[in-house]
Length: 287
Image (cartoon, rainbow, N blue to C red; front, side, top):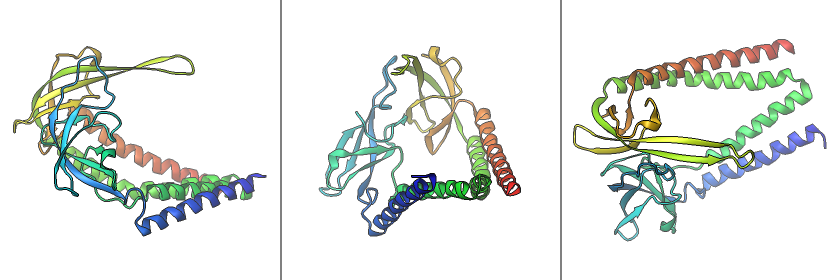
């Protein structure tokens, strides 16, 4: 079997998967559409143990109302329970979901989830079809078509999203300017050691945990993974936490660094447009 046949088969298989996925979405039978989505509330936060593991996130107790029985249900996030909760306080709303008819298989999300049509898989399959068509064009018509097929559409995609990136930067900078300052303390430093099964190399991940109280009296416990010097020795250190009043999970220890990161996002997107456009132009010139 030659490359042509392999690529045609690739496109056919992923094309069929995309058609099936879109059909299931229209019929309302995708996994996402069969998921029951609820809003839970954190009732209790367990402070992480210094020297413990970050796996599983911050341990919390969550309650929600079962729509079938109308009764209040109390659960924890122990074990594999969806998204890891890295910022918690009593009263915080989180998303709770489970397959229809299987409430024991619940999973958490950091925010209450909106209904989904389950189009992530079909969209991914459609992209793989596109990648196969680009490769097929390169094999049949010459490799410059790969430059045109990859650079041109991706440049258009990045250009369409550039205004949104700029708006997101301005919105984020405005939120940073409106943040309130609170005194915080590093109440734990978590340590996870992983060993590579191939070469035996070990890597260590350090995760400080910060605790602070907002002006409204909300006690927040959160993983603090950025802008903290010498995190391994940070246990007991006092810090200044800047947070969004309406959402304490949106916080930073260094607003200036956050602003620089937002500017960098715009620069990277603009550079991507330039590089992708140049790639398509080079491909066209080489035809």
